[in-house]
Amino acid sequence: MTPEGRFSRRTTIAAVEVVERATKTHADLTRYLLKCSSELAAWCNDGALADRFNHLIKFFDSHPGYRLDNNRLLEDELVETAVSMLPSEETPPWREPSAPPPEVTALLSGLNVDGFIVVDGVLRRAFPATLNLLEAEDEITRLLAKHTFAVAKGHLDQALLPTLPAFGRLPIPQFS
Image (cartoon, rainbow, N blue to C red; front, side):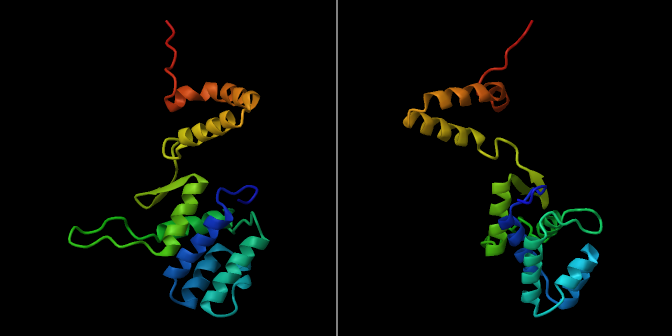
């Protein structure tokens, strides 16, 4: 993730690959880049279509936290554009569901790791239950106990105590 960004490099590159898959002509890519930023369009102006997308990834790597003409982060624009290009999840009943392309799988996986999900074609933050935080916390607790890190386990328990009612671990105290 960039210092101020929400998405990892892996997710952003997967987003570029989804946009690349949907972009058929140089003119379409040029128009998209010009809408984002004239500097970005100039940086990604040479070579075959695939080369231009590689230049876009290099630009992202060399300019982390780059803000577009509309003051949005480049990575946000790329990821949200890619999400808007994802195929719909609805499959007609008469058709066999097909496996998504690898670019789509990589994007969805990266978004999941970054704490996001796509619901009805819209990017949303994942809820704690969706992120399986309890399972991760249980794994940490198990490892701390296994390796006899009693003090660290006690510190973790004290740190998590205020958050446990929110995750349904302890009953919320009732005051009268």
